[in-house]
Length: 421
Image (cartoon, rainbow, N blue to C red; front, top):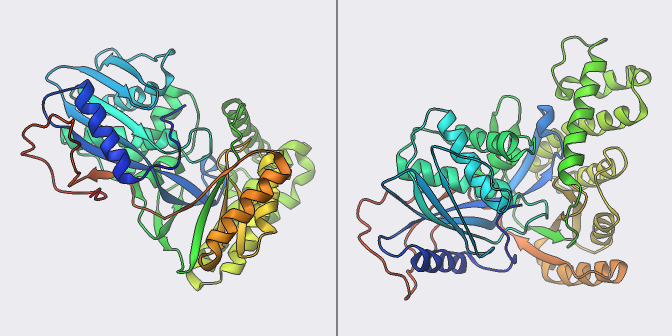
């Protein structure tokens, strides 16, 4: 669970909400404002924790944190969306079971300190418009914006890949979801107009331009993921078991990233059926990601669309993380003119599909898919076009709301993120 949002607010509105709420709850000195985006993954699902390849984009839905330092070790955190506060001491960080949304911030603080960084207490307000449970990484956005704020406010010597790793550790070791690195990495390192190819083993990355004339559509099924954490961790265990079994014949492998389709075919009879199908997805998905990058670089988006279809089929049949509503959304999108490709995105069991669509027909496409999905399921989806956006940064030149009681803003760092006015 992370900071929720309606999926309809603009960047300016989020800024005003954050600053107004900060002024109400923490009057006095002015806050600085930070942002970190959600993400949608074009292709490369459940490959990141197998040391594989992913191809996400940062989207223009985000978490924002208005924050200022305190002279003590206390962190006073207010969630504007949950209308709740949570307070903790940097010297004694424990999980808050009654306000679990705060654990993403608590975990980041704990991991930063365990890495040897000295933190100051904060007064801070959290707002966001990344829908929770939709597969768009609202939790990573909260983690990364918290880490970015502490880095900026405390002068931490921490580069973006290191910051992403700290946030991954917070979710894995403190929150308890053993996620891969993709979500935090794209939230920290995204660039407008680009997808990010990430080698999840080496953390090498490259920014891949999205060709002009393509709209990235996020299609929220409005089905929230009830079993995602337990099933996610089970899939990880199944992949680890597969590596253990395959090492009898391939002793050099460290993860499914190291297995080729040919090797898997050769030793398929050594694996139980469920394990074989999990392997078939991961091995094939890694190959699809690399082919997708080649297709984007050459401008052959038709190949990318085919790869997205194959990815969804594999996630549905071999990895078994789709659901009837996600399948209905993807099938409706595929049947709608202007679709280049569509697939489920995120951990699965609900949430969102992603579609690549010809920009010229985007408005008609959204309405057709909305009607088609509602007819098939009885559910009213949220469908919106997303711009591939920048990763985390400080929001500068914000228009302060009238109710805000500002103070001296001297000493603020240079702009590193999006402008809000």
